[in-house]
Image 1 (cartoon, protein in one colour):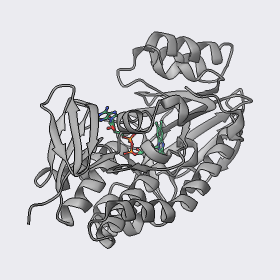
Image 2 (cartoon, helix red, strand yellow):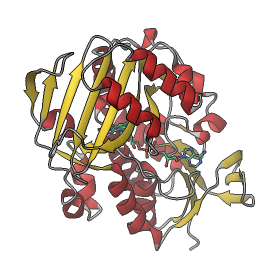
Image 3 (cartoon, helix red, strand yellow):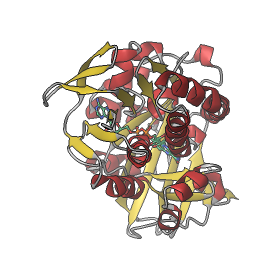
Length: 360
Ligand SMILES: Cc1cc2nc3c(=O)[nH]c(=O)nc-3n(C[C@H](O)[C@H](O)[C@H](O)COP(=O)(O)OP(=O)(O)OC[C@H]3O[C@@H](n4cnc5c(N)ncnc54)[C@H](O)[C@@H]3O)c2cc1C
């Protein structure tokens, strides 16, 4: 019997996890990733709850556990940097925290021998017909697939093409931030420091390597457009938000300009009435991002891929039934995570209520 050919857009967490599970279930899997190689994200991600069952099922639990950042906790400081309290490691690190780049590399490694990866390309158009989807790419030749999955993040190309413009799905929670690394001049050892003032937050931590400090500068903003702007404009917005701030702010702002691993990211959520249309379905942040403030994005991406693969296996090839079952099972979990993501963003002056959140 010929295997069903499936295309997954995005090679971060949800994409390679789904690729692994679908290959295991007998599908012929191709993954297309816009970046030229697996991305090297500087931040750490955490796992909670059922994500551990997924890692176990994929035979990865021991290997991922070994990557534990072993954070010991976070010191809270006031505007002058004077200690006001402490948070335990679980506050940010969940039940297990690992560097995101290592997780992505593992997921890529366990699939690379069995799955076709196409880097440096993107879907540019899709047309649906009775037995499949004809997919055009920005670089590669047009190809046919039985099913297409969008695992391509908050600004998913698959979602844009099959479901509609980003503004109809993406909600900005009123909080943005930058991340980068610099020298560990604070001498932090598997520990973090957090200064949360009215509408700004500085979070710094060091784990591995010991000589580097990972920095996050967050600020309340009503302007979702910044995500689509260039680095200079993004840096200017951060400088304006932290103007006149004391403690480490001036030094970190200076380090920001020199950082070669700078990224800008807003707290956004994705809300859709449905996560599939015909032979196309969304998984992970592309379909139902809960925002970084939820701390659940990675767990949700893994559990989403697993729930989707299991639904396809149970439906015996009936993708319509499978996509319905996937959505029915996962929606309550996603709703809970998204409510938590909004509440956490609200502590930074962001939107606790979806009705208040502007669209990018
Ligand atoms: C700053 C920050 C901190 C975070 N902290 C945490 C945390 O502490 N805990 C936690 O659980 N989660 C955290 N998250 C969220 C977590 O990273 C995401 O929820 C998770 O990575 C979602 O995985 P995903 O595979 O669905 O999407 P993503 O990780 O967004 O991956 C999408 C992939 O698709 C690719 N892509 C995009 N467009 C295209 C295209 N047109 N064609 C092909 N490929 C494309 C991208 O290059 C990327 O590789 C954080 C996120 C950010 C930004």
